[in-house]
Image 1 (cartoon, one colour):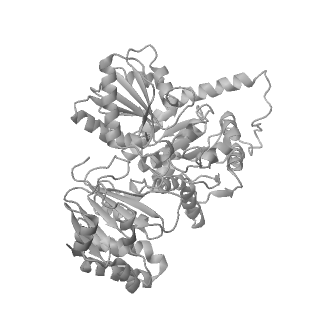
Image 2: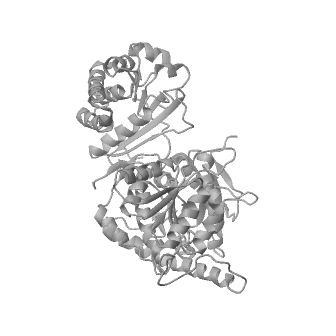
Image 3: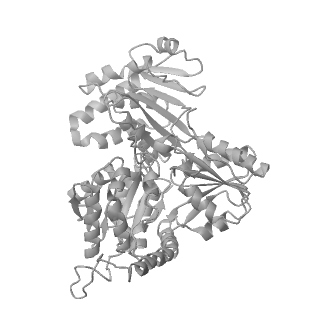
Length: 190
Length: 391
């Protein structure tokens, strides 16, 4: 594997936008001159079922076409998954896990028994309800990710989100912008 | 870095099809091909291309409509996967024997049952004797590039055979990867305008397509298909070279990775070749002189070039993503082993990834080690090894 490759694994439930997030972050990386891959784990599409998404970002071309088993970063879009899915499985030492949760990072660190990785939390569900009007945590989680993994620029994410959601109207775009910025500011480390 | 766009394999193929300006498309949706036709239909609806899209009630009808359209003299494509291809079966042969240059992205998916929507090559392999050219792609970029080349290859008067562009379902079709697209005008110029010598609608020069062919001539017509397939080797190579001049990405019948001094060589198809490149590097770090031979053309099967490419290999492993029941190893293994008939190196079968079972770098690196041990043992034969199978 290229040394400078970053591998991100997304955990969510069907319908929460993990596929959009995984591929959008890949597109943003490409725009910033890096190589990237973004793909979901496909099954029969069932809303609410646990799903995974994957993003690879690298300074050199990416050839590998398998899923990600030893992620540098894990992003959990739905805190209810923590009871049923081993989200930190394979997480690299010194890696990070970012969870959509109102709880403090220290509390989740204890719950998930995470030792050699950084733990971050942000209440993306609440943020998305307040700013977008419904529980769609994927865009604020991307904002939080940009804070904890500053290899991509927040402005590029915002521009891509605008492109992606433009057809849904300005209210949706502005709501997403506010949600992304708030999550960027409110993410906590512990 | 070239100007890339982050596209799925399906979207990349749809863009290539748009740029080739087909006259007619006839298709029926099936996962994982569905999004390709969604995207193409969107281009048509938005006026980006003026293809006549025929919505049909089944894949059998899709291929039948494509046959009629191509025989009429129109540049024609369809696209499918797995059970869709199986439903086309009867007319797939007819498209080839009528010498119709239909282009078909075939998004590889397991041919059930039990029902499975994920990638393997059992669908394409069922068509290996149908008379279609079959080109396999490693990633979205190759899917894009190969669709463009396919029209040139198929429509060449020395060939006039349909081409299947095989790319792995989900692994390529649904993965966003960097794809460098050519300008519309460049593609348009490269593929040119399709002017068939023979067409049903050419009333000045009446021709018949697909009539009753009795024992007096049927055999001769099959012999002509053989000749067309033989001619296609050279055409695939020359079109690939010309495409290389245009894009900086030359193509041939196969592609090697670290083959110069390789002693232990793996032959594979499709997206796994990308993962195998990384595995070659890993195996080399572990002291195995590993190499990869990525086969692009499965039909026509390049026996001579394969023999040449593998002449220095001490052991050859073959990775099949499909199975042939009742015989050890899959279809690719049997083609490779028969190509190397009379050679001194052992040729060892592996089957992996059926129904979308993931294949990892470490597993391929492990296969290289196995192959090295086979080489040292002096054995010439080994039962098929199933990679990643649960105990």
